Image (cartoon, rainbow, N blue to C red):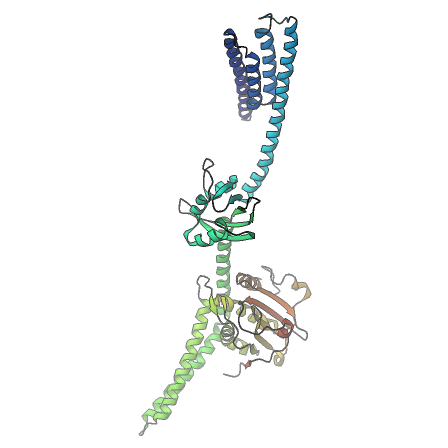
Length: 508
């Protein structure tokens, strides 16, 4: 089996040398014909033939062509003709011809080696661009002196014979991204030291390609604007990221269902309370109506209480459904305080069962933030349940979980503070790592999911031990610049006094 490649290579060598010999034979024949018509160009023809053979067939075949040319000049064109003997000045001419032919070969060899090194030096960046799926483009804005690397041709989906142009690049841009791409890179009119953005391409087969561009635009000495950049095909990375987010969403959904399953008894108890109150008020209202002289004012009070309890039950069901709902990630304007209050109401019964007091310390009028309400609820749910479990060994009178909201510059800050044993030094470094857990029955995904959700919102999560007892988990979300006062992060960690609302499990 291995003999076939060797045989193939041998045939290539034979063909190359055979073609070289044929080329020299044609050159000798041409020189003989011209000489017969008293046109003394034999030496020039030999030089051209040797130059061609060195350029086309390589150094060694070129050297062999030199030998053929020198022998041919001696035998066919120098007196005595058809003899290798030389007379008088003919020998001097032969030496000059020989030196000239060898000099042509040496020059050809040097050029051949330089070209090979140049090709190799160009091949390395080309290979690197192909491996990294990154091409390079350069052009004079708006449409002049356009250059594409080989990888750029592939990214734009054009064949090499096509002459690059700005119009061809614009033709590939997705219609929805055209305005961004034109003003951001392809049709600049002013210099920019740093260009960095992403856009989509709509290919001829209707497939969508995602690209990332990094570059700059600066004026040349001629006064023209030169735009240069690296364009990277990030389609695979984009799809991988989207699939990862979907997988994380699936995992978060499973985690929510698991948590809600654990809370089902507590939730049923919470719903039974307003249902029982509705029944009691309804029965009382009927009794007031069945009197000989109906007490309509009392009936109105009973009905009002029944409606209020019905609303309370409906709200609890809504919160429960929202936590178990499986839907695509939807970023919209949300209020962090409202989410905290919803979770407190949802976990009220669970806290009561564990004899834990819940405290909400909320900053009023906190700015709205862009986020997915369900995912932020997921963070709160996970961190609160972790706090509940951390305080199992804490004496009941000291079991307290505080949920805080703060506004600092361009961030909304959420803190969950417990009075448990705190974070162990051995666990601190791996706290948010996947599959790391200190619980006997834990999967080690809760805090990892919290970190992923926080990062997908452009925020971060951190944890630290309190000065007295317990631990605090802090989640920071970006909210943009709003008309709120800036605070000091150190002050946020201290006991806040703003709008403190105590929610005791016993108070209903």
